[in-house]
Image (tube, rainbow, N blue to C red; front, side, top):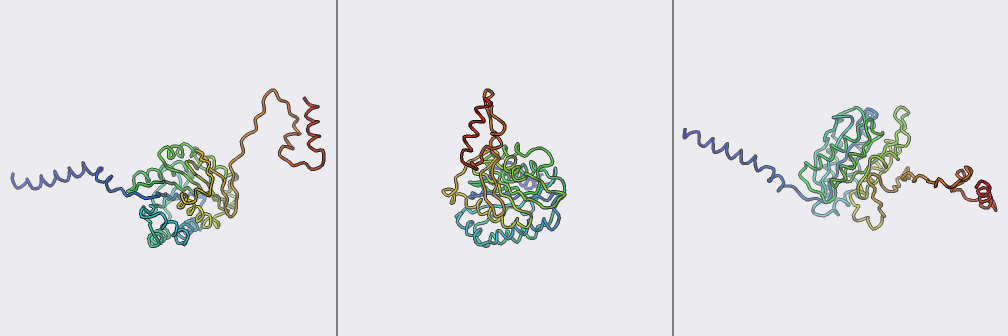
Length: 303
């Protein structure tokens, strides 16, 4: 019986270690300035060449001196970043695991890992599950960021329900969701109003914003600008007036588009009668002398 005692003691030690593992894991969490989850669309509408344009665009961004300088300015904490691929239900996975970036060497290593990432899925476009999966990865990793951001990019709206519920859930947990809408020229997959969709349905949280790329060829340029803005946001906060919206965001200018929130609807009291012609001329400048007076006279005649 005695010869089994060492084994019993070892087993007891292992069990005690398992019991106290969560506390130990929490003690090993590293504080960083930013946790960034890059969620890349790999649905069926994205062909292999377009997938590689996304991957090379992200990798090139982390090689740019301006991005590297922004990472270095984060200080000793640095940032943690991961690359996620997503498409339909149950098709989300980490493509490049979480990495700590604090300088040039780290950024170049992440860029190299991104370039080597193979495509994992095709399928439908399920943006809500992409946001949920990215949130889970942020909450389960070994980092604790002062800022937490999910960066969703895609070339279409969700083929299931609206992402607003999952965005609100992420915002409630302290995570901002930003978006990059890719305006494809493919007539089989082109979506009108995708910029507005990303603004009203996808993004949310303090300082959230959306940008639009004019096709996959424009992805690299816009992604670099977007990453720079996300990484150095605190340093630029005195230059940008933010209007947080949950979900929603602010006006954003990119190389190819100027994206604005949809205007608020016009409401007219039920007791007021306005001639329909006034709506057609609303907001237009006067084209000849007396134009405004004519409009006023038309209003008076139809009261």
